[in-house]
Every structure is written in structure tokens, then in C-alpha cells.
Length: 219
Image (cartoon, rainbow, N blue to C red; front, side):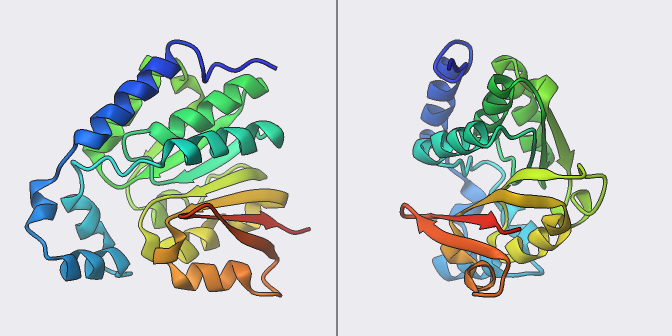
């Protein structure tokens, strides 16, 4: 089994992007108190304001979570992946690399911030995987409300934590039995955790590492 993940152009691209992400700052976010940042982040009505202010922050998955995404997509031979929260496209690169190594497929990704969409698209072109990705610009509650594949193999939740449940509502009917859901920073979405961990939820779910919830859709 070979992978494009450890070769140029993706390997050096990821190294550079993670380095850039570690140096990023946001003056608009610095103006907010910690309490106000948490209030906006956890709001179900003001999450767009939080992410507008965070437009200069990369907010990527960790390298470990990126590799996990690749592993899950490869091991399940995923063809159709949905991603909530493109940001600058680091997680998208891992997912698209898995699809390339699987022989093809499509990542449908959604991002609120237009400047991030433009940058993510450039990164995907640089990585040579842009043909595998469709980025939908706007609020995921609208962009993921329709025109989805008949079956979805993997769902990544990594956007506004306050609406994880609402995004799942848009996608759930398309999740095939055995589909996987990776929810990053799910501890900020207690209603989501309560939902997927419930005995009658239709999911089997466990925390994975420090900040990821991994769930499987039961048949």
C-alpha cells in the first residue's frame, strides 16, 4: 500500500501550513474577553460572528487527528466524505489524499468565511487534490441541507461546535451503516456528545485522544 501523504507535494505542503498555523494571530479575537469568546463560540445564533472574527486563525486539526482521518478514510475505502469546517484546508488535504489513494471519490466541505475558502482552494491546487474536493461557501446549515451523495462514508465535524447536532441532522439520513463521524473538540458541544453516546442513538461512540469523539453509525 502506498500513500501520497508522505511524498511531495503534500508532505512539504502540510509541514509549511502547520508552521504557518502555529504563527497565526487574530487582532479581532484578541479584543474579546475569554468569556465573550466562549459565549460566541457556544451560541447557536451568533456563531457566524465568532468565525468572522476568527477569519485569520487557522483552527486546524492536529497532525495526529489529520493522520487519523486519513487512516479511517483509507481503511473504510471511503468514496464520499462530508466535512463541516474547511478553514484553510489542512484536514481537507488529509481526506483528499485518502480518496486519491483509494482510487477516487469526493470531499464535500463547507466553510463560512470567503477568504478561507479562497486560501483553502489554493492549498488544494498546490497539493494536487483539488479535483477531489468541492468547497461550499456559506452557512453549513444551508450548504449541507441538500445535494449530497446517496451514501456518505465519513463525516468530519470541525466547524462551529454549537451546531454539531444541527449539521448532523442535515447529513444523518445519508450516513451508511458503518459510516464514521469524527467530531473535533466535541467537548465544546455537550448536546452532540449526549446525542451520539445515548444507548438508543443509533451510534456507538467513544472519546479518542484528548479532543476527538469517534462514532460509528449502526445499521
